[in-house]
Image 1 (cartoon, rainbow, N blue to C red):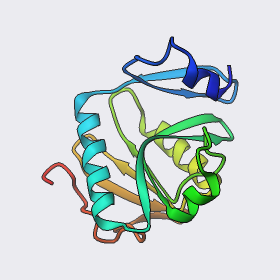
Image 2: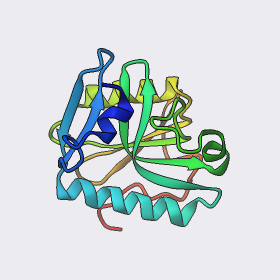
Image 3: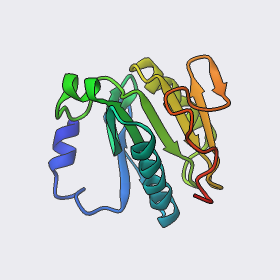
Image 4: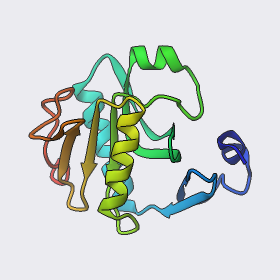
Length: 159
């Protein structure tokens, strides 16, 4: 199955799982928790509040060198959306890709996704840990704060 066929399949429509593929086209599913969804919503609210020339989106699919990966949250500029319209999956990553660490994912998996997103053009990768603390990265490593959204809080647990 290709990505669009997976998205269109009634077998996957109502599943409470995040669905991705690997480089072999195999389907990988991860359960989502309510805390995960709450953190997604908080990150989207902050992105909407702080960045004007673009939009946040949840469950952003990107075709990577290791299959289709789906970030928990992403932010793309107006120029990004003009270039890619309704592509599914995107062949280029939006400017900011955000993953929320959950019990079903290892830190190593997140580092792999970070590198895949950077290889697809992401400018920043953010990792939200299970305590709601944000860690911001560019291609050179960890940053004290986001360069694209410098006022984004370091913790979303209390916001």
